[in-house]
Length: 555
Image 1 (cartoon, rainbow, N blue to C red):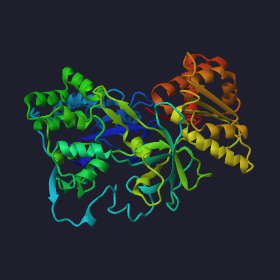
Image 2 (image 1 turned 135 degrees about the vertical axis):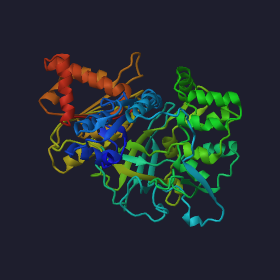
Image 3 (image 1 turned 60 degrees about the horizontal axis):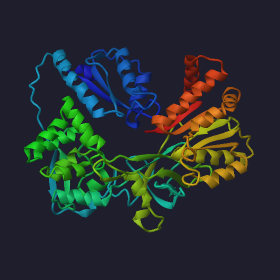
């Protein structure tokens, strides 16, 4: 924060919110400092743009906090807080904010905008013809050869290569593929708690990679580096270099999500057909017509970069510029479906493969789930290795085993609760007094996709699982979901919460389920606690603050 010493300086904070209004891992230290700081930030000029998702309760909590806190510490806000909503179109929200941000900055500093938009490459291409192959990255995330000689501690920059011990299909029928995987973490020194998340680094489908290579007429095995033209920059390369185009497109770049508008804008210059070039520029513009076109032609049609290249025959960008523009392929997070007390050397995953037909008739497949589905237990084969690390979460069993728990997790939302139930069974075996353990689970059809049916029945029979309530949404004329079962047992729920000080856990779909469940709790609390709606809402929010109502949800 020596920015105030630099003349005409301005700091722009782009703050993403994750989980229950939490900072992202890379913002944690900054967030802690802001909370404890009593620094005088007068002289610092700033603006904040928040990246959030309206599906979640704590929409853009980090952006709002940083914006408010900087002002409290004496910094001067140059432009109002921008709130991006990834449930809508985050890109569009940012462009709209940026359009007003620049004039405000120019006005504040008394400068005039030139009005010229220029496209400047950030990296330069270097092709290596005689390179020592031991110096070439083949998919590692941080240290070269880190997959060959593994050294703990393992984290996002240094993932552990876990062997897949088991990969079995969980559902008995239906068109979906739900699976249970077990990753071997022996000798890794990795520790985890029930409720934590496992992150895996997937690889893109080789046929997609090959098709991109073909359409751009490139030898994918060319070894190259993209070097930052700004030598002062900390970021020397957009992804580990030197590497091959094949490796970059397989392990480092996101080639399956519809590209953002900035990518289309930069690529437009390479379309030799005037109509196609204009169309790309229009979609990247902030004009209403352009935004609508981008939404329908790219987002709703789920066109990835390959589909765009296929549907725009004159667009043939140099592959190195495409690699510079594409975003990084991100790790995928799964709620761990095991307890380390029972399985200290394994991490279990429960997932459903994502596969759907787009409006253009193409079959799109989820990167990580399709890749995991093909992982087979095999002592020697690389097809059984999964690069992974563990991310700690706030989703924790109560400190006292005697505290009752109410777990609500339809579909793959059951995952962390398998771990919780295993742990409660283990505690019981240790002679601990274990409180009521209540599960609300839901799936489509009893005979089709009732996950972990045998395990749950066994836990129920042994008395570890005191209640097993299952909603089968499609086994009767009217849909039955977990919230309907909660309403049916409302007196019991209120007694557990009010008298038993039960902890409530909700895992699964954020968009509908988590919201419907929360509204059901409002109703139950209002009815049995003799409260008005606002009081009931307040009561549930207090449970959340006290850590007695926890969410592990995704959209």
